Image 1 (cartoon, rainbow, N blue to C red):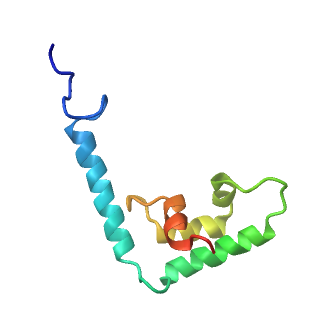
Image 2: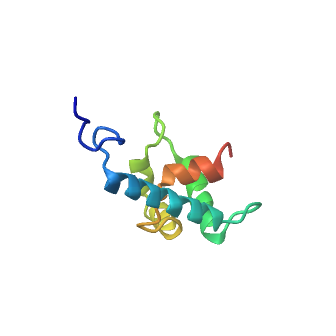
Length: 102
């Protein structure tokens, strides 16, 4: 029987999808490598301060969502300054990797 279309790749992954994913992974690696190992960059400090202020002021009975966070102009602007469009890093990825258990 013949091989499935795109043999060697997942059902919907062709060479372009694989190359795109690899390029995104390279951008992510480069981005995190550009950040200081033992401290936070100025942009990261601005996001952390805005995020913790937002969380301290959160009064809803449910946990905040990313949509709630992005409704706060000062926090959204700080995130956009840190993670510009096309950098390949999502806010959640940055939080998990750089904020962790704080």
